[in-house]
Image (cartoon, rainbow, N blue to C red; front, side, top):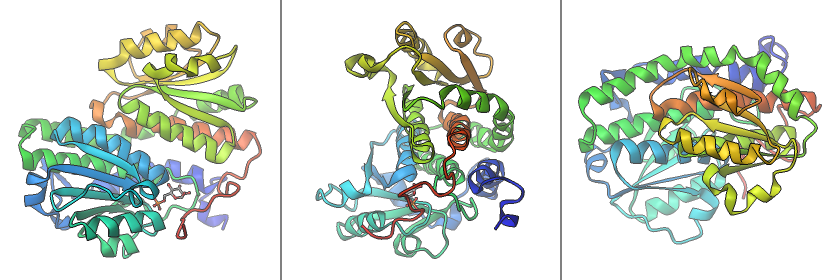
Length: 366
Ligand code: G6P
């Protein structure tokens, strides 16, 4: 088994470092000026005429759906609902033949996600699956499949599957935007080109591993902490929080930064770490004022911001940076320091990184 880890201490770290390749593979052949999803057999008529999109998944895959909602609504101007599979399947969901139903699953075998797919199909919806496993149950039962080409993911905590799911969401958003005429050709091309720069940009983010390690040392004694963010950064905050919980057993809560004052601010005490995502230019001032709010109450701020954001350094103890890209693509970069943070924190706390207690890689029973 040591050999399969390629010299890395854990599968999780190996898989974090495999992300540039995973994204490169997932993009290969699918970008040609715009997006080329011919292999996917996705119903063009439905792309054009769908009334709504419903994304259903569990765990990390669900978090990719939350990012997908921002991207699809933003680029394709179609309403998107995101639901947890175990909730969706039991609530007599409002889907029909006008719904583009999207299920996301790394393994393609998660019981609740598969049941949600069947429920949606029985109501007439066409199901588009995003999965990493060829021939999996979800791949077989969906009407069309977009494979993420992340390669086998062994660590229970999902990393490269998540970022490739985000790339798939971007493809779907661009395909919808193209079909519905909501984005000019040049805009689509611009985003597609920005996607191709992501693998090299992820490599740059990974160069900050030593800085992230230092942050792990700073947070390792805490049993509670917060992640905050606005807009799509809120969705990334949720994934960062889940990663940390799963493997380091530190309880983390992700909050929409603007919602803090409606309750959680009461939990901010001297020194508590608040990991603050601040990559979204259009809400940057608002996010900074939320950072100031928690800082004034003693919080220790670890910020994730875009390169060249000089201002953020005035309000944070540590700033981890991500290269600049199109705003809908920042999650693919911003999540990387959070994955590393979860990893190094779990290591310094002596946790079993690849096999956290009570968790399974694939949940095929209810
Ligand atoms: C399990 C795993 C998670 C994963 C979730 C959904 O809980 O531990 O890492 O996100 O299942 O799995 P799927 O294979 O459907 O993406």
